[in-house]
Amino acid sequence: FRQAITSVVLPSGLTSVGSHAFYGCEQLTVLDLPENVRSVGEYAFAGCRQMQLLDLGSSLETIGTGAFYSCRAIAALRLPGTLKTIGSEAFYDCTGITTLTLPSSVTDVGSAAFAYCTGLIRVEILSPLTRLPDWVFFILVVRALKPLSEVVSTAKLLEPLGILLAVLYGFQWIFKVVGHPIQWYLFTVIVSV
Image (cartoon, rainbow, N blue to C red; front, top):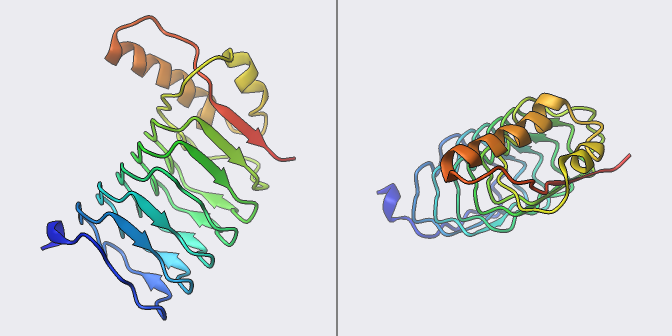
């Protein structure tokens, strides 16, 4: 049954989406959360691999663990200015996301929240976070031109295991999988201070 769902219209009075509510709806292509939704539960949309358009509304405060796990077709992700918590592995393996802005309202980001988001090339952090947990951006396969020393200098507030090793392990992974010499990759991190 779940594999046949291509679209969903959620009621306007809805305030939360429960855990595993649309888990494994592989053909679901568009999600438009009603304005009143404040939380998305654990693995609520995990495995919705065809989801291309994602509108999280303007009232969302909490994204649960693995909520959008392996939603690989999401290309544009706009996190609302009301968002406070992003659970562990919330966007794990969302390979289509290329840019990400953490709004100033975000106070908590779980481990591996954006791990294996191999399409990411730009992350803007407007939040007053003083550290990000381990492996939050693990295995970034990012494109190009700046040496790692410049990347590191822009990531002063980020815990080394959360981003620096993620980038280095990303290079190791690229080398092993593709089999070509390791190249420098650009990962732009903008930290607002």
